[in-house]
Amino acid sequence: MASTVDAVGEPIPTSAVLMASAKHISTKCRNENIAFVKCKKDDPNPEKCLDKGHQVTRCVLSLLKDLHKRCTKEMDAYAGCMYYHTNEFELCRKEQKEFEKACPFE
Image 1 (cartoon, helix red, strand yellow):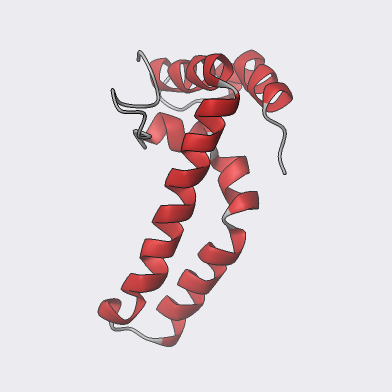
Image 2 (image 1 turned 45 degrees about the vertical axis):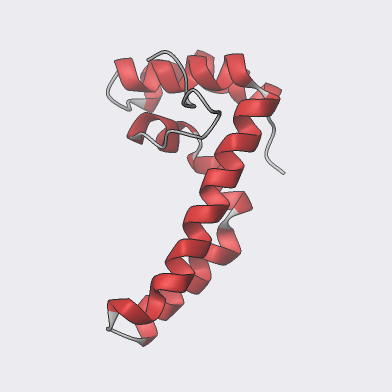
């Protein structure tokens, strides 16, 4: 896994990247996720929650871009480890620690 972004700098949200960024996503995009889940619970029609889903997606992609900009090397190393080890956190604790030190939760 070479990088977590494409040639123009847009995030590539692979499962490894999302798993590596999960703690950041749960902190930064909490309100958007809660609104989406509440919408889904309140209305079984999936079309009614598209806007809330788009808000979650925008938040996550914006966060991934920011994380990559602030701590490229550490994020790539952690996501690369997660990719190599099929998203097994236990096998990537060293990379996780370095990533979380370089990009602490906000």
